[in-house]
Image (cartoon, rainbow, N blue to C red; front, side, top):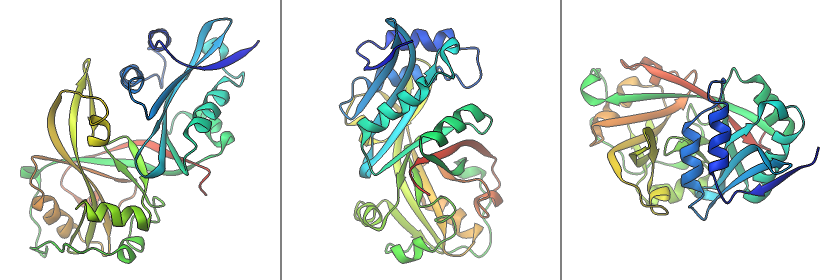
Length: 292
């Protein structure tokens, strides 16, 4: 059986592929909206695998901020699995990306996908944990700092709790990880996207909720400047790091943000965010290509 990988010029075949497998575990119909969206963005590519002119697999890749790449939408038609097609799709996406860092999400229960990603050269970084916080649902705690420090330092963040635990990876605009190096930190700081509040240093992003055919997505201006979309409401996303473990400082930082809704992106086992009086949601495993 000869299988070829092509850049997709008509995503309708990929949407059909997802619909055929919609009742199977780990088939995410929301990806069909991303196929449509990413096919219109120059920094993204959508690929399909074909066998005898039949679409048997899909994947998309995006060149994101700070030389980071993102891979998603991997699906192989059921009767064509375990034939190396998933590997070919991953390698095609990675070859096109050609970025120093590349990331993907894999569900903890999807052991077959984890095996595939690891065989191609990906490693597990951490499991995502996020909190959606409404300010009125937070109880003030004693001992919190009352003012923000506008001059956070890279040396402090690099040694803070949370940096090594997720190997310097942070989420920006919900889905897309970036590698937090000193150079990236300095650039974010110059754009006022780094905030020091007491013993908490947070990487921040202003993002927007977008409805795509009934599916909610969160995008930042990096995406929205490339394709115009109707936004619904603004959210503030933060990735916290802890110079010292202080729940009260985290709460005061959240109260200091002028937004009705804040999303905290962190990792399973976060010792500070887990003490908040809001419920967190465990997400997928973050996989990183060629990082140990």
